[in-house]
Length: 97
Image 1 (cartoon, rainbow, N blue to C red):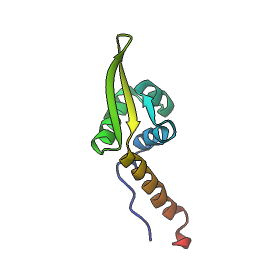
Image 2: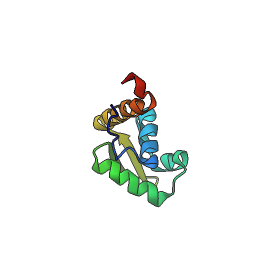
Image 3: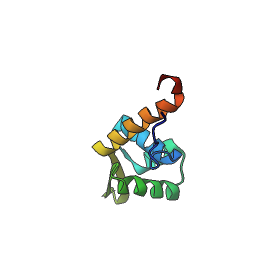
């Protein structure tokens, strides 16, 4: 009746990152940090977990002599998010299952 929720996406900050990237496709670390209201250290750890799961790609480069980290959602990340949302809906409306 209830579908299993992806433990990678069930973290509030990781879900926030994926939700942001679903809407913008790619974003700079500082943008995500600001929108998610996260600390740099915590966000860095959560981004690495999403990267290890194959849900996002991370590109590190320099822009005007400053380090820049760009995060981009992968097709696997889009699929995982869609599956997560469907599974979550099964909890919101259990009578229709």
